Length: 199
Length: 199
Image 1 (cartoon, rainbow over the protein chains, first blue to last red):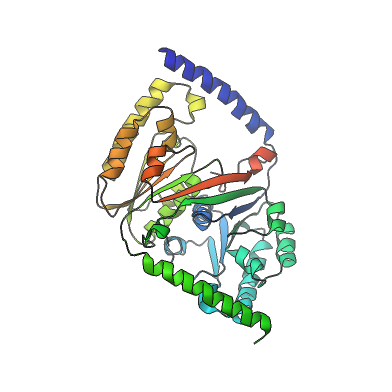
Image 2 (cartoon, rainbow over the protein chains, first blue to last red; image 1 turned 90 degrees about the horizontal axis):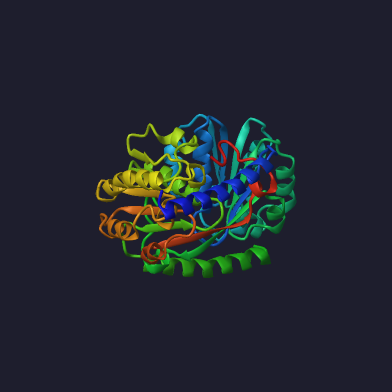
């Protein structure tokens, strides 16, 4: 074995000891609250990746798309026939297109009923609340309502919250929080949003 | 209309003008290099989200899993029957488990042949090089080889590179780079990795 191979092996043995200790310490089993926030790409995309993952084991999944739903959506195209997937969409389009707070608030309250139903159902293993952060920011939805529904959900249920500027109360409740930061974005460099990649 | 509604409308009109300008400026159409890096959750998950999205439009997709492939993988379960999806896996397991640089290097070079084939195929709309950053970091794979393959790929092909510590040459070539930063991670708080959520 070369010197480099020997050093690699020693370094990997040390790393393995650290990993094994962490794995041994992780003993709690329950559903999580996961927050994908930040100004970069990947918040909703990672949520759909997790949806695909959970469906791959035959779990039931609920997705609530706040704001979105007018645009075509490749993930919806690919997965919507899955009998274990329940999708509710607000379908108003972007707030800067509707420019109508009263109508958006009403549409939001209606789709929240679907979210509340999923969050109360112990058969639903994963619930995605896509872009709900904007609903809280604009005051379309009350933080107390959301917090109570999250707190009282079934113990085994995981919830993913996506969107920029996640409310501090949601972040405080969360088990896993990822801040997806934009280092560079093709769109800002003049490259068009791409079908099958960006939407 | 209430004062608050009027202010909302005015603010949304201003926002719409800014968004419309950005959209008008984004005129270039081509495949992208996307890098999902950072120490947080979501790098691979967002890549699988994009795979699902692209498959939803019937595009051909290639996924190369470096390192991973021994563990069960919900996304693979859910999508592997898709005739438009081609998956190549290195399947050695984590470097801290194999502890064998020579054997890992050989396995990496073999799976790279699949990656090189996908990166040369104009029929493949999206290629995911999952966790390839570790191959470069450990010297299993040569940066020049990867850089040339990326540079010479078909114009319409998008490539997603995932993993921590992305090589500076790959970051320099990339169109979109997201740094997924861990704010909090359930695993570090003693919660077990969860089937259908974490893998």
